[in-house]
Image (cartoon, rainbow, N blue to C red; front, top):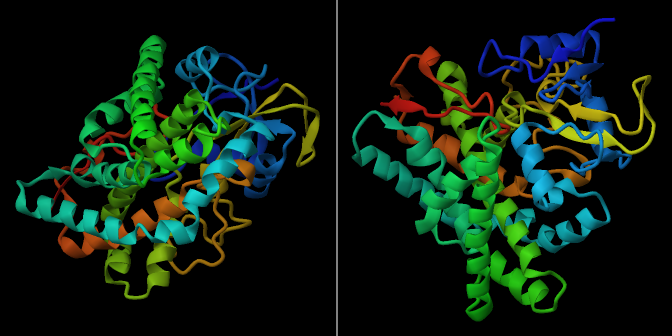
Length: 400
């Protein structure tokens, strides 16, 4: 019997899924793999199978169920010692929390943030232009932009960004000290709890104030539940978009003709299509969506028993040739583009309209403001967050 391959697998190119993962998708699209704790969950690699698993409620998101394939010792340690966000819950509990937030992230409501995003982008680019070169794009632009926007949306003081960014990084550090990750979560939770108490006394025009007014005062939610929701939104609202943007810029600078397509596009549909392609090709949730079967389920002729863990690999599913013609090609006119970069099913990313709008504004603005944009180091000098659940460059030194 063949020993299961280790997962996650190493990359040979920072902009492509691991070659071994592609081989699985081509030859053995559902196979056992071995993860950090020695367990052997099923790896799902084809697009339609990934969507089927993520849409099937017989696969649970509850990380405390036996057999759930935790991403790392840190994530397992934190989950066992603290109640996770509603992302790690199943319906009806998950649906109850999600319904309270879905109205805040409609396309129409997020479109109302366009002036704020445009202004933030303009100001950050102006600051870059007037400052010294080279500059780290991550710290100067990619991280501040989504942080400013999510702070505005939630009602979190941006002045505290260094604190919450530091605590978020420690919570997500899969190779760090599990006890320190737990402390980081408690620190951030206490900070948000104090902020929520202040909003009870003096509410503002922001999402957290609305949760306090409509859910906390009516006792539909406890203070702890509001704090947990705030933590999820704050972390997801800046970490994901910052890494997607940084990785996208690195890939565009590696492929100048693609950068030119996006920079020179006058049709919003082309800009939007380019963003969708960057989301598809550069799927930053590279450790897969984790589930555990709660009953026996057959997927592509393979019987997955109750209690078996499952890893739905969105990054290689987004390169499935049965769904995406010439899947490794950047094509801003690709339609339809049914990628699963934001997940699928009931747990599909709530904040995707916001992420899309930020990226649609930021990519062309950066490339047009600095038409001679280039890396200030060799490509092979860029270090990436290979060990973290959200992938991207650690730093991106640029000049023009």
